[in-house]
Length: 511
Image (tube, rainbow, N blue to C red; front, side):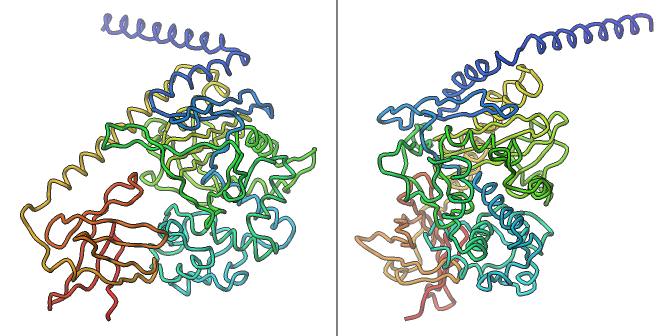
């Protein structure tokens, strides 16, 4: 027992020494040192993630303490990535759209509790009861019952067409009973803004938000960006070539602009961070009432842990929720408000701890490069806690690498299930023809030079190779989408009745 107490005393003494040492180390960090520490950390982390380029803005207590570009806009021509380089805000646009609606709330033109279909009669879902209950606020919280139907905007349908086609989407769960992140309801919010204000979402956000803030190099419509503007190029890792980083084409999302259509730069986005950190004040005058601004950051929907970001495996929050355009969780006893943005080959993140008046924004040009999360938490550690001990870049890299390795393992296992030496049930010509889906529209299967090709809207074509039986494997012209499984179904007479591609079923039209 004596030895036990001596050992405990030694351990307590040692722990006290280590704790005191940690406190001393934290105290040795001055505010003036923090920008250089983060700057060096970013430069050392870029190669780990193979990220060609990014720009970073940090705002503390209303002041820009770091604003810098790193790497290149394009790995081919090596143009430097600067603070003036334009990139997509992607889904960080959602918080901007929420503020646009909040402006109209303050003006008395709409209420958060208004029923959407009373404002926008063309808005209908497959369930009339749910349609009659959805409020303006519900458009921002991802819990209306509508599942992910992003292929509608990917296929290039207009906002009006998407509204019409949404009526055929079966609901995934009852209203407000669960959570599914999706973009279409934010597009609907943009249409509500148009109906209430008389201006398109693009014009409204430009005139009522960007111009007053002084964000004169920020665009709500990609097509409006001057051809002479300096903008980044999307990049993707090619897993067929040992994760070689390659440039890809931009996937235009202006048809759901209110969900993720804004393009900006570090120079402009720094003003956005200051605007939010100062509770929407412009020249000392509030754009939003205090209570309206506060409503944006209140938890509106609980998010199940499995539907949140993998980073929680390491940050270990006690709760996860969604506000109006903001993901939320606790970190080291503080409430974090943040949102990521992702389009093919491009990323963004906006994170802040309001209590500590610390905000960070990151633009990047590599698909799902989670250096963005690492830099967000690193900035929080530095400016909120004066702590430089966590190596989030290394930790998150190994976390996401493990997830990627597991996904590739499952893909390999799936491919190994191929049954060799089989043949299609019918001659290839029998599979050709026109097909339709109530939600996603028409598709056509053609046979040219003994190759079947599935043709979808927006020039998305999938040349097919026989896999086994009546199943084929297709590769899009967008190689970064990977391979798609196309399975044809036959009736009892042996005639083709339809096919499914990545789980979306099409019925063959009768001649």
